[in-house]
Amino acid sequence: MLSSLLTIGLGHYLFVSGALFVMGLLGVLLRKNILVILMSIELMLNGVNLAFVTFGYFLNDVNGAVIVLFVIAIAAAEAAVGLALIVTLFKNFKEANIRFFEHLKG
Amino acid sequence: MTEVFIFYIFAALTVFAGLGVLLHPNPIMCALHLVAAMIGIAGLFFNLNAPFIAAVQIMVYAGAVMVLFLFVIMIFDLKEEGRGIFSYGALSNFLKILFAGLFSGLLLSSILFKISRFGYLIPDKTAPQFEVRNLAKVMFTDYVFAFEVLGLLLLVIPIGTVALSRIRGGTHAQ
Image (cartoon, rainbow over all chains, first blue to last red; front, side, top):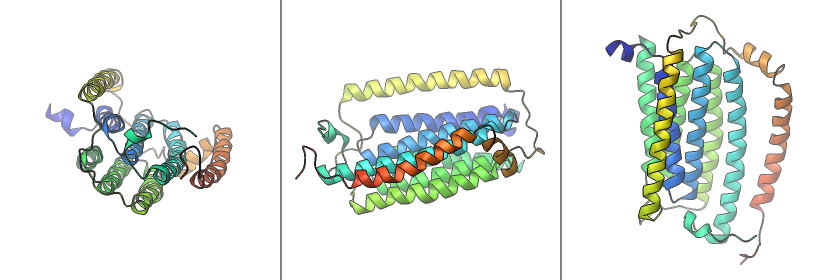
């Protein structure tokens, strides 16, 4: 038991990665504020990145890290577009609660 | 031994900061917790022998993306949400938590399966497999098409962002 705590293996990193993904999932499902929902999506993306780098490290494969670079670039682009949409929503509704965006027409 | 300590410190930082994003009522504090989580993940990348990825993580996420988030929060002057931070509906929230629990059980079982198959793997700590040179070799040979498409995407995204944030109108125009 103690030795499995003191030698860091594949599983330890994967547990952290899975915990991050589930916390992001709960944030997307439960939170009301649309900005916090976007932040939770970033949290999920980071959990996946951690899993990629972990497998790349333990399997001695450089592809894991390259894919993480692509994911980071796309996540930054996605955050920019999402925030532009949120700015437009704020301008029209003066409200951050996701419940008020049920009827979007044009 | 030091890498064990580094792992536990940064893993605890990451998990607690993630819980802060999930549970804190104030959006600005959520954003700051997200920065802490990014820094924790960068530390874990560093521990995984990938210092370049860790540096990119801090620059892009803790730098660029979080500045955007804080900028938007401060422009619109978001206050703490008064009446509960979670969406309404007891039944729907119960179902959401139930299915998230089922999903985390699935994730846990697949992680345990991976450990039972790949748990014996001992990484080669002396090999600098995530060095910038190796990353660049793979990125500019195997993934060169994806890299070009990514460049096109990063050209289109700023134009789309500016166009989107200048939209006035639709049926809700005031």
